[in-house]
Image 1 (cartoon, rainbow, N blue to C red):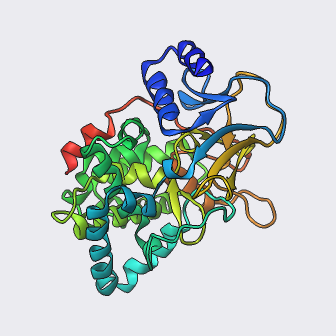
Image 2: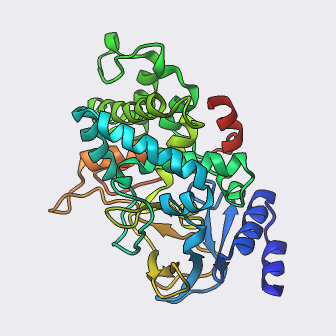
Length: 352
């Protein structure tokens, strides 16, 4: 407890202090790291080491129950879980081949992790609907003021894709948003594509346009299938998708503290799963190299090179549109500077 009080005292940003207090309440231990809002972070906010760390040292431990998964969501909100299961069964029967193809593409576009966890209560074919269901549980957590809400309300990102989704203009100013040509694309979508290309000029605009189109197709599909059945939020859907990590082929999760760590091709931490820790296990974030005190911590969300180690503009396109991170053939990547935007609660009120 004394160590926790010293940690809170050393954090000057109120949001960061509130987040760490929540971590302590929910059972997350941060023995070697803390979230900081600071210009020293590549994105304006990140996770930093609080002491000198040696390779292999655990710096953060997260109990499995703290993670937002479909199984954990169903256990915390059983009534909503039953509704989502019913919708899943309906949507599985009605799913069109094109939509299934898009889902298969997007289900591969997650932060990559080795298979590290087993969850048995998510149900058959649950993985097809992780985006929609994690969003629904996040909204329910906010509505019920569940302990998760303190964390969820701090989800944020500022990049052309999130701005486009927040504006909501793609759904009515031009439905043909997958056409990349100026005479067939909505102005707001064209603006997003142009903004992305300014960030990553080595990626062709038609590839950026196609990736933006796929993301918007999924948002449209989500709103069409779930609106007026359960609470929905396009903004929170987009945020959830960008924060999720694939644990296995069947389980996707959003993990507190893990989701606060920024991307770098040269990561310095990795995640492990402790299967025998408690009933469901826990996650550990471990230093993969020696890390000096006050150094920003990084994960590598995905690789942007091909089998020969060369920069792959297809993979770079997904890195850009999924997380707002530009890259180039030189191998340099830098996240978009983060801006403190409206909370998820404020966005969900608008979109619900």
